[in-house]
Image 1 (cartoon, one colour):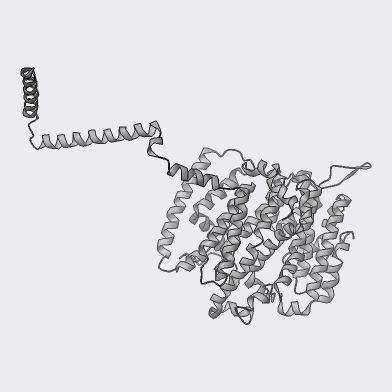
Image 2 (image 1 turned 90 degrees about the vertical axis):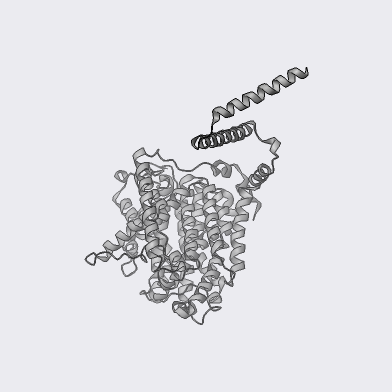
Length: 557
């Protein structure tokens, strides 16, 4: 790691944001807190009941792999539509996970965006761009819409001969690359049409009114209304337009190279180096563009530009996580992104992994891919420490914590091979609420790495590699937020001699001993009296003995 970025980690920016949350929310209403805690209690009861009912039906492995309640004995009335059942299932998920339920209630009732939008001041074009953003990616849309308006829109409207204060247009940058990615993903577009579009896509950004109507992908609306994006793009300051055009050109040519490669189209990714290069073109370059825009706008440390491997790892970590999770969906679409260099160790073809005979081999292959992704985490943590502006930090950190949570979910999970697996909505809300400071973001990574390490088994051929990757995350975090002093203090407290005990502790012990002795004595005397003990005779005898001893002492004198 270069000395420049080390300075970022030890500089004032990290210390400033280390211990304080980066978002502010108004205090919760007492009624809301009571409601949230009451529902959490009900959720715990339902969770316990569900586990009791389902225990004969679910194996331990199935119980871990079920990230929804779909395996629980609930199917709903037959008259309900499938969409209604899905909605009911989501509510049941929340009830069965009380902490997530509380997070959703807190978020929905009193969450306040850092920089709320004001649609009344937006043009019709800009409003439509935000709608397209919501269609193409809800998770990204949520964090983009909370960016500082200067970062979010970066409008450079001409007033006379001067520009208003310029900044970034992250929203448009995302939509432009989403349009490019939609063309690349659409398998219905023949290469003779697709390749020229990919290689010249950057030129379309300056062609007023350009659209593309022949896509069949789910995000085709972005291409069909691309003229609105082009108009808003034209309002950006020239230097920002130049950065976006350069990134779009590089990404488009990289995608075209892979689409033109017949071996790639037939067999997919061959080597791990090819795997990294592909992820670089579709995600790493996006990280480069965002870094350049962030540095230009003053929301990130300029020294990030001196360490390009950091933003590249940010993109690769996200893209590899998506590729691992979407294995089954990509296979159905005849797309193979798992590198042959890895999967060929476990099967003769990728299609074998969906058969029961190769399920265990598929899980081992999954482990090696996860180990490969985990090795990018230290670079990602370095990068996050250099982001200075709050809303930009949220924008960068939230997808990363979603990715590590997804990796923990798919680890040792056979369902990835035969279906689609994703983290629950409640989990997503909890992560969004937590990932607002560098320290808490590091804690999230550490927690999920510990979960992965806890389920890692020596039977897995990648056991050692995964253990080392998780240990490196711990080691990195320890260098930033060391806990050795806390351990030493605990040891010193345990070894403290009795003579060093505080006066309060001694008095407490004496009081407790005396109280216990008095209570025991009173109890014993009470029992003796109940069974007929003559305390009056005892007192007389004691008195006589005392007087007799006194008389004897007087006689001797």
